[in-house]
Length: 196
Image (cartoon, rainbow, N blue to C red):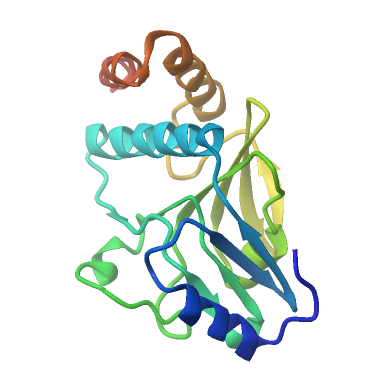
């Protein structure tokens, strides 16, 4: 965690580190956090992202997935690299985009963050106006919805309003730890098909 980092210094660090790096960055109001993902983090991130992709596919909801893209706005003094990100409501305007400028492009509709050794900087996501943020930590999933510029907790995902997302995601993440990723994903796909 570094404090009193200017926007120009943040941009220089991003440039110096380049696109092919393991470190993940989050910047908010002069505070820069650099994280090195651990296997525990990566396994949870991948399985939750895969579960979301299955939900979107099976429910025939179009999306554009932007993974850990750097989302930043100098005028908001905020920049984040989520564990996973999806354009759902705004997917059509993001098709084929290779660069994102949040002064003209919308923020992702759904972001996933997995906290293992550090805490997600919610204020950075609030500043960037990300409407839905899923936060996974210590075996718990929290859905955060942006209302009046601040996150409130919700038991329901507006992206998947008719499904018990929190309980279901947690169940299949836990199942993946005992039966393996592939078996858990197949079981999840079967469960989704039974719901629709």
